[in-house]
Image (cartoon, rainbow, N blue to C red; front, side, top):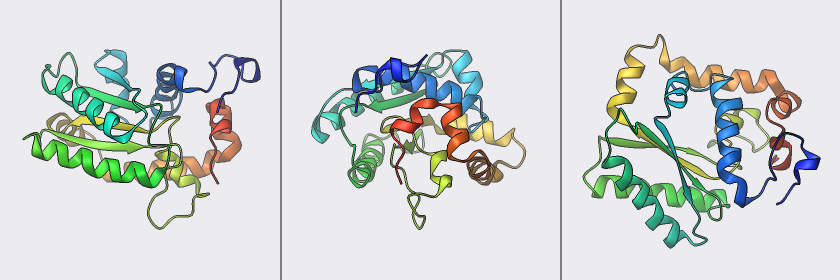
Length: 199
């Protein structure tokens, strides 16, 4: 899908070529400004959150590029590269295919000896939690402009959770916020949402 910036002032075309820019805006406007992840702001402000763009059009090519991103973060220090958001701008558009790919990616972490060092969080334009209706607004806590895998350092996450009061309430709070904002509120917050809204 391509939507021209004239249709959506202040934002680039919603197209694969602009995936990086749209993702940065999504992180800023949705994840940080809405505090969906209480630990995101310091990583964004310090530039320790890195973005990796996987431009392969096949699952095999996407898998190889994901492994390259995993190797990159594994070879760098936490104080310089604490976490990676891997964006698949030309593949994995089908949510079920994406979930299968997520399984392979998690297996790759274990097989490479990095189990317990890194873990993955997943985001997708058509994200749907098991047992929920696709139209349920709670799904928007994990919906993003493009399919994404977030590579997280487990040690860093454990330290962050230990310093946060009632971390178990974060998912419930986020879901309640999605319901409160509603479709119109979410689109107002991040206008490109109107172009990848899935019912």
